[in-house]
Image (cartoon, rainbow, N blue to C red; front, side):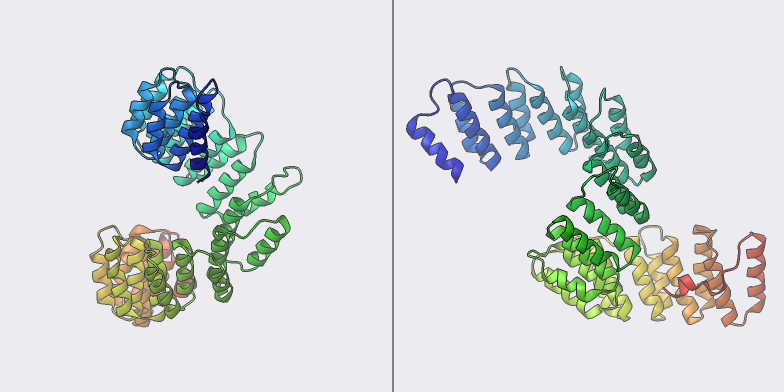
Length: 459
């Protein structure tokens, strides 16, 4: 309302007249553009007796912010004398919309470019998964700033190429918080928690002396979650207090995820209930935590509460919920949950199928488990067949065990645990000749025997 009040004063006292009027009018146009009221902004712009490039750029930015690329392009074409901000704004607009062809065309036409021009092209290609094109622009840059390096590191992180990200990170001389955050996040997001924590420790070294922020700690908490060590939680909370970093919703959610995955559900609930606003990420973290800790009733209650609050689940939410049903052995309820995914426009992934196969298998419904695998619209991975194989071991079913084992051997020929499970199935059925044959094949292929395959049977 402050800007609108000022607008009234400008009109009342005629501040828009005179030599400085253009600056006042431009500021008001910019205000309404940022407010999203393009109708008033356009009216004021059209009534301006004189305009400068800042006036034009304000209108251009307003239309781009509102997502109207067609009108934005028209405004861009009408700018009498475009500056680098005009070009960068239009290029960024097309890049955000995924139209890299038009963004590239404008980039090639630019009379002069700055860091923002190059970075817009790099981030545009990164955003839409074309890491090779992003790297081409990055390599062609006459000079790079830390945003350029950070964008490429984040791009490699998105496509799982941690080694390339690390190679770039090592090349940078003056590493700032932006770069450390990008690399720590890269490690954490790609299941390399130890490296994330090592880099965090390096960052705190007095010789480096880069102060972490909320984003740093969110990635560090994620890494700690993956390691599953509950001791990290209290340490991080203490460290945040020491640095004076406020526990915002994002950090609280990351911490509750850590506590939930480490089995400290009460502490996770404490953080969850303390959130001012509970979003999908927070609910999903709690549902997943309850699921893996065997608290099926709590997980179901949280799911219902979430949907009642008009917060709709994603695929990870269903991983947590199905895991809860699996731990509780609730087969029919679990299957209803699995089929309900389409109600939320979600398509079950191979991991959802894997949990259902495990649920059917543990309940001894091996035929249904096998039929579900056969119905999968995607190629089952070894984990899915491994779940069936483990169920066959639990229920001593040789017929289905051989089918599951054969698929496991084909998909992961070097994993000896599957051979141990099949050997145990044969032994339970007193099929000693098959046990000897399998051991002979295992020895001939150079595999070492893993008795009982405890890491799989404890699943």
